[in-house]
Image: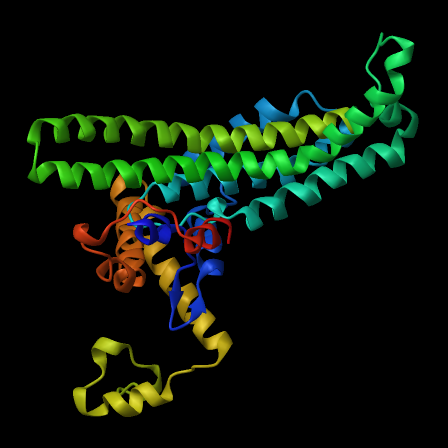
Length: 226
Length: 102
């Protein structure tokens, strides 16, 4: 049962060849850019969604920060599509792998920090000390703020990994429970089915929200440092 | 103008059964050839089901259904070698932590 529970997070392989690149590239096949003014329905919906995300995210940034628009939009689209495809039965979700999320979080966070240090050195260093702190506390607070700065990429990655993995695990467990209860107590299996349906709705919501949170935080770090 | 299309340029449904092996051997199996085949297949599906005036949800649903079936075939072996309920234990072994954080 234990191996079975975590088996869905193992890398899918065909004949020993890991297929992870295929799963990461599959969402790109669902997005089709078009150069026409009037598109087909699918492209129109995608265009509308992307414009919605763009306006929501990038209006608060400076001109320099808005050069990151493409990066942040790609990020939120990638994470949303991967999370949503992971809700499909038997699907493998790349965002459950900590390696992928760290690979997304660390370069983006480091880019914002280096940008802040390069262009606004004084302001970036001043961020390490909140306003109005009592003088005896200053050395300790600077150390604490530095530690919290370095925790940011790890928190970004682990947050996404843990949320998606937890949701998937819950669904697996409840599915197993329902199957077992079907043969013994039928009525309680009805309850678990209802819980599973609610969980699926939650999963869909979490998929979207996590992507949003990830991107929002990266853009927040950018805003602080641009 | 030749009335008979040469074997190399014929589509699969126009090839006679006897000529099938030689037709297969004539296909372009280089990386760019395979990539071109994927591209042709993708655009064939896209232009038939999605890039139309009144596209419906069926275009996307077929893709997702194929995705589910593909995932099932890939993980078939693992799913069928599962333990029976009698063997299940609730002790966490070290094999799990590797799978979890891998």
